Length: 81
Image (cartoon, rainbow, N blue to C red; front, side):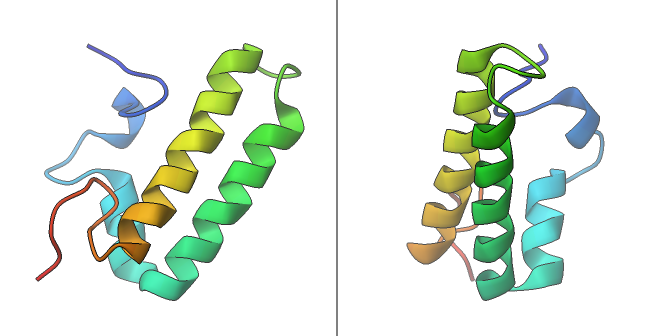
């Protein structure tokens, strides 16, 4: 089932989700900055592109990804090696 906020099908087509690949490619500090920027983007356009609540949930999801990394986990909550 497609979850357009937490696990959109267009980002989950391989063995890992796109968000995990971004974290691996960018490293923790740049990844957190990326997530902060994405959250700002979703708040900025909230109610203008998609449903207001959905856009705010997307912003919340990206902030959650950043917090997971700051807590020593990968973006989807798995322990980092």
